[in-house]
Image (cartoon, rainbow, N blue to C red; front, side, top):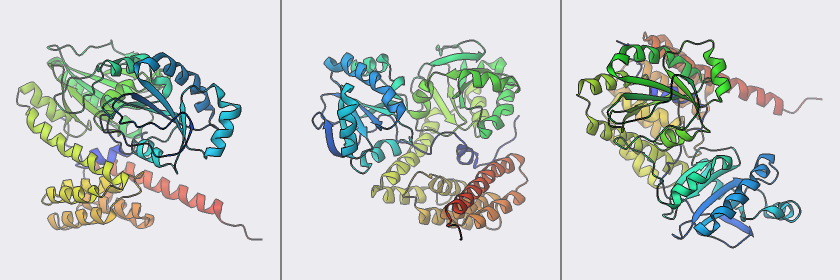
Length: 461
């Protein structure tokens, strides 16, 4: 059997993912548009209950954004009579945008608006952890965000499904597993989640991620241990097929591997379940439903044992997952500066008051949400203070988390010193490896900031 791993693996390993922090979930209500000026077309309300809105965040000076204009024109023409309204929201001043529209933007055949001090961008792009443009959000007639991604990835089928009310996103345990949309199978044959056949472990990963590479031996061992019991492991990579092949040429992977098709499978699982830290795994039962999700090194083996033995408690897992969803809700509210975040934060703290592990995890998740300008450091400190009372003495987990909190507050050298102290305290090799990975990130950030300060310092004559 595989050794037990560090209790903080879920939170700590997520920080090495190539995607931004935490995001709002598909199916959430769409925020209103806060526009400085409508440059082309009349103002619209995304919650009017009449139309389906395709909101594109773009900039006139961006070649990538200009390249997407023909695609958006095509979508507007094709779906205009079906109630689809395309809106381009620019981050540029209204006068600059008007100048572009007069000379180069005459070919744009959809609505265009100038954002008001990035307020709309914050409500969508920042809230969903996106910082690359162009980027599109689709809002259904029910006023909820149903899809988001690059405009070139918005194919006709997505809009057709939304129009015919076929678009449904699994976002809780027990829901049917969405099909895989794969660009290329790199190792193994294509699979279909047919009821009554196999138990599937679906892992989302990236070849360039140290955290993902670190779990490969464990996944190999799991596949070997459970292959005679109907368990099939699938690694869905976020890299282009050629990059995955290049990586696999020098690494031993004993399970099936596929390259995602423009993150379509990731959107159906990772985004729908409010996850954006990799590696992350989902278990799909023989009934074709998603019955477990989490970090591959935290509970996956036990879940498989219980499922095969017939003792897996799905209802208990659903309740546990609801705790995760509540944390996601907290981050969403905090990112928006919503006053409800304070009340929910106090509730989450109270729910964990007798569990040092959960208190450390809560504090860690608060402070490592680096895209959140409203991080509640006082709440994180309070959670750690309570954890120290429950686990007196020098406990590696508590010391390390305290180091991360101090680092994120700006006292980087002190935070790194505590992180090193925690590494010396632990005898668990897996825990030590996780701490060292995070420590490397902290030291890299401090070094980068020091270099930036030197560059910006005025030169002496």
